[in-house]
Image (cartoon, rainbow, N blue to C red):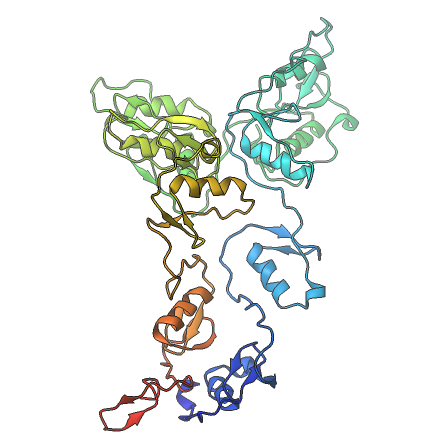
Length: 512
């Protein structure tokens, strides 16, 4: 414990030693002083006399609680890239692994088709990204156009007028298999109907025609027996073996306690969208609404004369299209914004700004003046517009986040066109870059380090800036223990004399 540490005054002798943590200390006394601050299991030893010849990368000890799973080359699943990095950092270089390509992601069920260079139409850019990821390096696709591909052979095919009924996994009977396939032309890629067996859905089927194997995914459906099944395939297998009628009814919904409040069409606030839908299923749809005009704006961006009309419209829609109240009043009034989903489907606004999805653009445009509204310019990032531009010869220097001076903002944006990293260069400030002293653009990463001044710094960049400004020292990794104030027991070897109130001259403020 810090309170048990004796006051250690280290001699001003420069006899450097390299610590086991890769840090050079002026002499052995400094290591003893620092070790007094550290727990027994985290003591520093002398690696070798002299300055450290190589400074190893500081391994992070605290990772964010973000679920972005990936598989390492050691066949171990890691919760996020930080956890993989921690494991690699603590291994020898020859033992380190890398992340395997992880292509799994939850794509929004939106139909904004894009045409890939393989001639396939994808429902949106997210599904295109998954397909691109699965192809691997060197075989990447490109988006040819932001609409459906011009198919050389149409999806719909002429079907023979022969009655050979087949049963689809949606519980519907089709005249023959060709008609089932044609029906899929009108359905999104993520929800196709597949053939379960020959014969009508209501007919008894031999067990050998029932589904025998289902995937382990969880996409629950409710059967007419009131039981919730993990997937439609499992429900079909159960009902097929029982020779029962297939189909769905309204089952009770079990919701999590996650708090993401939404406003229902009845004017009540629900803990999350699941709670709202659960209540809606047990409430009959309104048949008669008053004629009063008290407008409300729905999340479908339509204005309804009153709460009741919005509720009646929403009640008759499937769960995926349920409407909730964005705000009271007309949709085009100044009451903004409504909440948006956090999926990435970038669009470019008429103001030259890239928004993460169309809803975010509409939210930004809601507060603009009618004379200069923000509207959709095109799908995809705005950066591609800059890559086609020739920048003006105007000298209005800006300093980039990489501490490089550019003639103007256009030149800075143009430099991002040839970048392959995920960290684009942004404007740091609008003038030529100054000599980078103590100030530096630090990343927003939380890998805490405790300084000898008792302050917890979010990462190594922040403590380096503090060391430059305040001449503080690094104490140990992790958050500072607030119950035990840290005294600067070991001071840096620098002659900057100060006079104390006891009329004694000290080598520096640290010794005081």
